[in-house]
Image 1 (cartoon, rainbow, N blue to C red):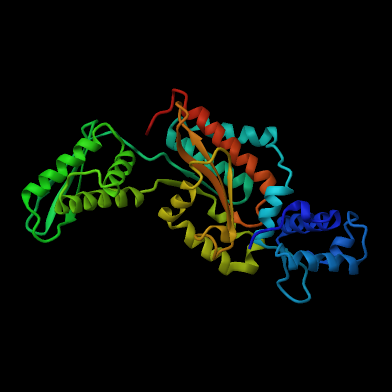
Image 2: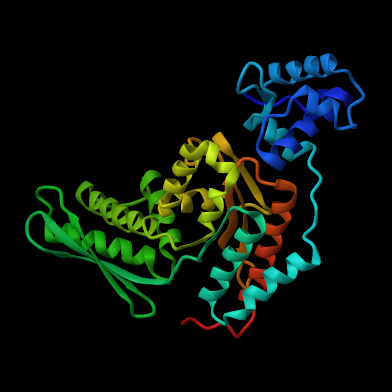
Length: 354
């Protein structure tokens, strides 16, 4: 369900909706008509407020967890708030100093990553996460070495001299000439490219019918690409800090949701997939609750921003994971500032790997 445009909400509906969302973000509890009438910001009777709340619920922006309870914003409502109503608050001088001080304290890249995720965790009361840049060496060649009738060794050689091996299963009847042909074809496409670039090129050629490979060799190429692509996807490097923040007092009434979120945070590959969606973004991205399949069960949100190397290339993502009642107006600029700070520091000399 999509949210109606903000412009379609009346002024009083917009004001009441904003107060409900802000109340939910502040304490995680439903907001009722009596509370809204007592804020001083709504000059309406409780009956009129209840009528507006029902309109907002009918529009899919609010939900009532119980018949007699107040309202909570839905994921659709939170999206409308974030995109059309929220006023972003820039990080304070103290918050900026805390982030920057942590980044330079350790003196190594790994320490900077850990400090960035720890600072975001502490400031946001969520879990801070940094996706470390993937190692993408330039490649030299790939060859297939037969290990018998049903298996072969795929040997990947990098321009830096590094060698990695993976065993692949062979289809019946594969000849040594097919192995050689597939290896020669791949080496000619891999040379000088990263694995990601080479895989994209080869798959475009195969799908477009622009190869002279026979069926056996084409099958070997696909198997070779599959084993390396799968291997890269299963080795995400993540730095996560602050999972304990998700177990505060407000979480005790919904411990099953928090347990689900903690389980999700253990799945590094899946989290990397979520963060990877922010790599191509020009600015900070926000994934709210059910908008992302991974965190839909726990009802959690992700705020993530890409960071770059000294050449301006996106090499990683930094973010915060927490309940949907994250203080988006405050956390979004924090994540953005951390990404900018990481980009600035990684682009400078002086960082060492330990």
